[in-house]
Amino acid sequence: MKQINSYRHKKILVLGLAKSGISAATLLHKLGAFVTVNDQKPLSENPGAQCLLEQGIKVICGEHPVELLDEGFELIVKNPGIPYSNPMIQGAIENGIPVITEVELAYEISEAPFIGITGTNGKTTTTTLVYEMLKQGNKNPLIAGNIGTVASGVAEEARKDQTIVIELSSFQLMGIQTFKPRIAIITNLYDAHLDYHGTRKEYWKAKENITKNQTELEYLIINADQEQTLEIASRSKAKIIPFSTKKVLSDGACIREGWICFNQENVMPVADIVLPGVHNLENILSAVAAAKLSGVENIAIQAVLRTFTGVRHRLQFVTEINGRKFYNDSKATNILATVNALAAFHTPVILLAGGLDRGNEFDELIPYLKNVKALITFGQTAPKLERVGKEAGIKTIVRVDNVEKAVPVAYQYSEIGDIILLSPACASWDQYKTFEVRGDIFIEAVHKLK
Image (tube, rainbow, N blue to C red; front, side, top):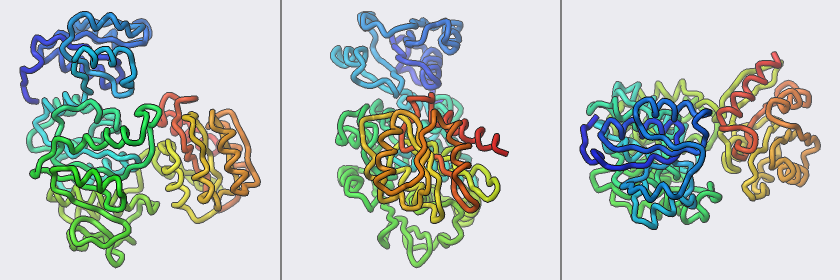
């Protein structure tokens, strides 16, 4: 890693722990900063905070006392999930204290360049595809960010001859100052996380941060089928690389006469791709563009797309039991993701859905419920989903307590040839800590059926 001195002897507050906070605090301590960590979870229930305390880092747990800001901090590194409406963050901004996220630290110390991926849907799949293509092409990539590996931890070990492929949320991107990926991808933009950002405009503005520091020496891969992403492209200084599933492009990535193409070169036939779902073509095209810009040969791209069946919790095939196929799409935390999942199947579906109520309705789902023969609901949004299910003409609608109980009920109403699909259209936080936990419980419940 780069041995930078910009944090030496600076007084820095790390607000909120989890993986990113622990990594940021440890890194800043190594860089010579005077670090204070503040986390809401009590110390007795906080092994991460206990570990930092053993390193000689000051730790304050159990609450977020606003009076901490009187201690003269020069910088705050916040957990991405803490909203800017938090009194501590508001107070810092009012006092002119810069607020960043751990991704900014990763960029500052990294010897390796970044390929950054953001968007409303498809981030994890696209990030994984780009990583696998670079790996198959012997480019020795690393993977980091919102996908589960902490960026600063990866950046500490990265070498100049490597590339860090990083998935970035809008929460993370709000806290950058100098971060500049060599290649940036915006997969698509829809309404999401409005409970955090407040408005659609603010959400899209956060996503646009991925390209705000780019110059004509960097690339921005952008969805050419969306007006809002094209608007971002018009403001970017980067070299624009478009992709489209609907238009044949003279430059960029598209589908032409049954082939995946990049800059008018045939890369591979669409028919050879094993990843299910029309929506995944967006992810594939953007990943192909990033791989080609990174010098990956077609043969390596083909090898990945002929074998890659998806990432965990994103339309993941679990198993087949007595002629019923089970798919885990727990990462479908919004309506569009569930629409895309439903569109991937042309046989009868038993849909398992429900979760955190963010105040929205689900009427947009109605046109896509034609193949759903039974709807099993759970969580806070169960009544709302049941209403749209009835309007869509679904005859069998059953409410259960949770995902674990939904699985045997779904099997009970299924027949040979049916798809049993967990695609909640909601975040998990009303019942589960993460969508990964929700998906793992689904998988476990499926295997119990055997």
